Length: 150
Image (cartoon, rainbow, N blue to C red; front, side):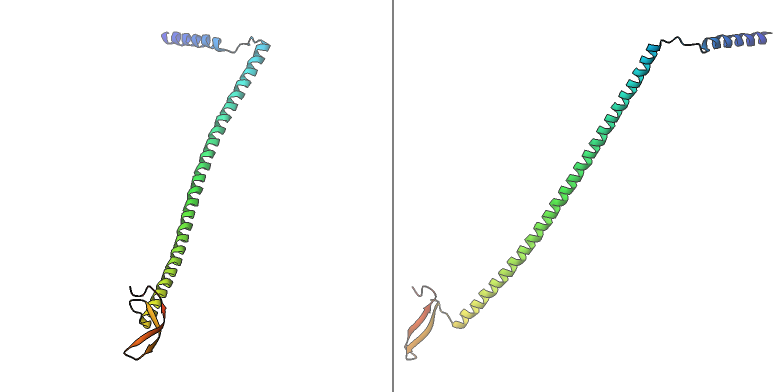
């Protein structure tokens, strides 16, 4: 009997609670309902617009950062290429200077050989013609290449 009473009370409690939860017709004002729907749509639209604005700002910032990185990379490559070109030009200039130096050294060596062949003395005078006896020679013509003897 006690069991049946407990079951009956539980059933009445469930039915009592269920009666309070059963759908009832809404007492709605047409203008207020329309206003609330329009306000809800407006708020949803505003939130969507704000969300899209934030997303576009993030995308623009990411694109700007990528463009800056690409510009830095391009600048670095341009600087590298300019330095490489400069080094190449410097190497060419050095090669030309080495050629010129070698030519000048060969000219100096040739001139030294020519001077040695002419037996030029300390006064740098080349005797062209002499007159007189072999023991007493007198210089008749010379092409002076310096100050002579002082």
